[in-house]
Image (tube, rainbow, N blue to C red; front, side):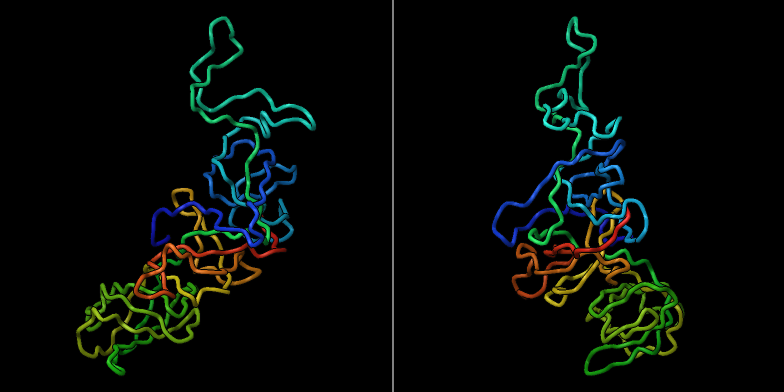
Length: 302
């Protein structure tokens, strides 16, 4: 579960060449209901469909992410419905919004003014190396059951070590929220901590935030760490991450997916200037956007 319930759609940031982004309008598969900003794939018959978010090999379809949709899907009854034949005209105009047939034309429909026409295709920004995109950051990491060691004061900062019993990907700079401790460890509940050092999946060291004002705590015992908001910074540039679909139908850069060839499909190329903190030019607002390009030659399942 992500920290935010919904995210901004993925969109184009700029192109390296300075040209407009390369777009195509391939025919759309039937029954698609995705939103604009969705990564799409081509299935085995050449129709676009929402990408499943899983990197795999030997599955159908076997091509990479085709690009990012510029429009909502049309929920077509038939794949490619209304799409033009080769060198032919576009099929009869239609829309998902109609108000019944006009007089004496029972096989026609009335499309209200302003209703978007559906062409049977998916206008798509191609995932090539010339186009840079932006997306919000977040994490799909769930709560980890942890055993926290003794909290000690080191150079004015309260530090503790933790052994986690899940395979969540902790990383340096990750913000976590502590909960579930009892007894001597109860003062940790509700405290934020920042993971430091070089954590592994099973253990890490964290610094409690300045909101903690207690003394040293011994025998803190078992509790939980919960993912907090992610804070993008210049340290993320050059790193690879995956994309994850949130519960409302939009995608985000997932800091919990960090393995190229397994779950990472984008590489970060820059901070998003609109989200940079005025006080710290190399850090962004929590869950801010980052600029990325797709990693080429990956194999995805659609």
